[in-house]
Image 1 (spheres, rainbow, N blue to C red):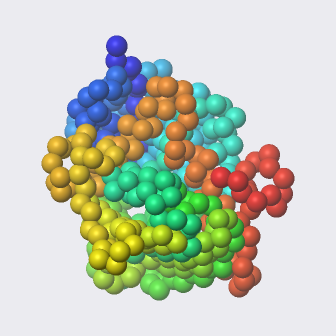
Image 2: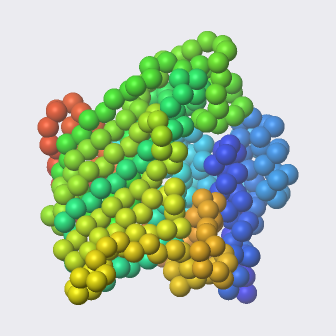
Length: 400
């Protein structure tokens, strides 16, 4: 018997539409599952967007007041894709109403806000999910299996990065992502969140970090409310100040003894969406780049010297999740497919009552690292990663 789960989505920009579409794909993509998402209600303060989302994504109703999503008795899951400054208020209301919560990254505008949101959800006992979708690429999941099985030996080095050109033009509009009151962190929250989560998953928690940041483009043209995305260009109209960082770089030391670097930039010129990582061990090495997300480079020498170099592996039905989308090797998946996997994994945790990953605990682990990075910007030196988890002793090192 199908388990129907009522969905309410708050914030119907690009990401809200992607999340909504992903829920709708679950019955066809995971046809052996008994999960049946019910698209109950969507909310956006721009009525035209809310109305459009209802029509395109099959919602039963729409509203311009997000509180009506929380109070709707048919909603079991509240999905938050609204701007960052609304996350604390919405997530707190949802948790107190006993609703399960999916939230886009970064969960809070600051590490402290993420810690607050994690606390209220944990206290309420609701299931949580976070939009760290890159971890769901079939070949990333396969690489994780290789690492966990010891194929590459003891991990010695890890390098992660997210380079994106979306802000490389000085005419990219001053969307909420560039404003401290609305976004909080800049690249540290937007892109480094993904880098940090992937590093935690692939290599493990970070022990200490030394970090730097920089803002390259100081002013941008003002955005028009309800129009476009953070990719929109505009050459006319007034300009406003960019209030957060464009670039973040860090050297890191992991709890397992590995060393490496984490780097993210939204204004770099060249890479389009280079969310990438390389890991080295005592027996082998693996590298992956989202720009070629359906390929994985694996170096596992067999000892005879004949095969002594990287092998390019193409995604195939034998790899996790691939066969849910198609039965053909090298017939690749895309970004929206990763969001479908993400939505399915989250709803599985709702259906079973067993918290999956990544949830708010993993978001808090990222926030702990972000906090250490921002402290390093001020101190100019190495900073330990400590837990911000409410109820933990002050100065306690993170365990997740």
